[in-house]
Structures are given as structure tokens and as C-alpha cells.
Length: 358
Image 1: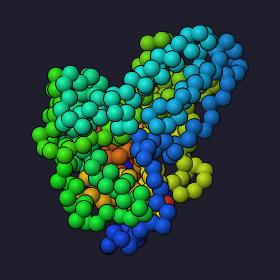
Image 2 (image 1 turned 45 degrees about the vertical axis):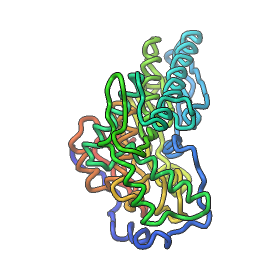
Image 3 (image 1 turned 90 degrees about the vertical axis):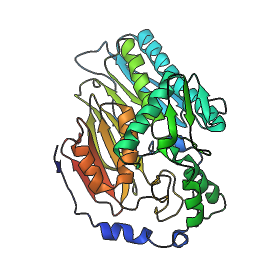
């Protein structure tokens, strides 16, 4: 895979200059107080169009379902001739999404993830939680810690400061980072535990993707061949009527409207952006944090990833954002069926050759 489609030249110096130096220099006068971290990325990618079927297959109808889950509006669009089957399939898909929320939400005290964080150990974990954590650690190892689900104490530090319109000091960040480290998660089929006190896990960069994948499996088990799932990440099955792909627009992180259109078929799409939950008006401090430094990366404003599964797309969009454009391009080039679109802080856009632009 080669890197291409560079639409504007990038200037890393100009992108990062405003975000360097003393943290207090980038203080926000109106910091967003957004607790619902699970909804990161959902505002970045907007469904462009998938109209009602016409023409060659008049018996095929469009069916739509919308529900609240995972801190966002989950939307499922299905094209199928039988309304009863389509509705049952969508019910099954939404049940799977609800199942993931019950396992992995930080806002449900009875979720398995909340119990793990509270106790430091969890007996008889659900296999889906084991899968989510195992995949997360694999990516942590691959990115040398740029992706790390133990970032939760760091995010909470920033969130607590946001309540008082301040940013944490470097000393506070250093102290909190001693309670982090993906290497301290121990995973087995019968128990998950932390071998360091104070470890806290968030699966906000994984849960939506896994939920979308399980929802897709549920639809396919009901014989659905053409559907689009929007659970914060997009899963495309087949295509809508009279089209060869699902058309999805990638919204500009600073402006209204789309910067690109994608034709999604057989792959999943996820976006991570600095605008989703920002701690300063200059977008230098936001919810996407580098676990290795305790600070927000300064070169990119958004990353969109197309991958075979939503779990991969979800976690990779976060990881690539943290890695920065140079290392991210290198990583994407080594992966099969994975492509990415990058938007720099200055608004320049680059994309890998295989990114599904239309």
C-alpha cells in the first residue's frame, strides 16, 4: 500500500506551534464539559444519502430504526422486501448493542467494566469483554503504547479540571500517569485483574466498534444482505438500492459541510477528532490524549479509518491520531484492507490510495 492523494502540503511546524509550551497558555474560556466520552467521533461522519428503493426491485423496501445507546443515536437502515423479518433483524441488532453497553459502559455501575475498575479484578468475565481487552492490548503493543485503554485516570483528571475551567499541571499529569500502563492488565477466560494499584480502564475507543460488529452479525443471521449500521462507527453490508456502495460524507472538523465523500461497501468507517470533547478553544487540549506524554497530540484535527471491522476502525482511528501523520502512514501501509484519511490542524487533507473516496 502506498501513500497518496495528498491534496495540500502539510506544515508540521505551523500546525503544532500554537499548542506547545506552558499548558496554562492554552487555557479555554469556555471548556466543553462533556462526560459522555463514549460518543467520541460520532459527529464527524455524516450519512449523506440512502434513499428509498425505486425501479428494478419495487418489492424491496427501506426500513429504519433509531435508538439511544452507547451515549449516541444508533441508526440502522435495512433494505429488504419483508418488513417483519427486517424489524426482527433490527431488534436483534439493537439487542447486541445494548448488550455491549451493559458490559462496557463506564456510566453503569453494574457493568462488568465498572466492576473491574472498582475492584481491580473481575471473575468470570464475558467473552466479549475478554475480546475487547485482548484486541486493545494487541494494538497497544503494536503502537508501543500510543493506544492504551488505561488512559481513564488521565482523562478524568482533565475532565475534573474542565469543571473549573482549568487545565491540569504537569506535576498532576506526571502523578496520574503512574496509575496507567496497558502492561498491567492480566487477562484470562476466568479472571481479569490489574497488577498495579489505581489502574482504570476505558473502552471508549473499542466498545462502539465491537457493538457495531455484533449488530452486523445479528442482521446477517436474519438474512439481511443490504444494511448500514451507525453506532458511532459505520458498518456497511451490501449496498442500498440502485447504488454500488453506501455514500457517507466526512465532515470537516472546523466547518459545516463535508470535506470528502466515501463509497462504503464491505468495510467499516470510524473517525476520531479533536473537536468531539475539547478542553481549550484552540483545540490544543482535548479528549484524545497521548498516554506516553499525558498531553493531546498537536498535528492532526481528525483521522478517518476504513477497515474490515468496526472494532479495528474504531481503535485505529484513535491510535493513528495519537501516533501522528508520519508514523500513522507507515503503520497503515503495513496493514491489509486498512486505509485512512487525515486532516491536519491547518485543514490540509491526505488519504491513502485505497481510502474509499468517491
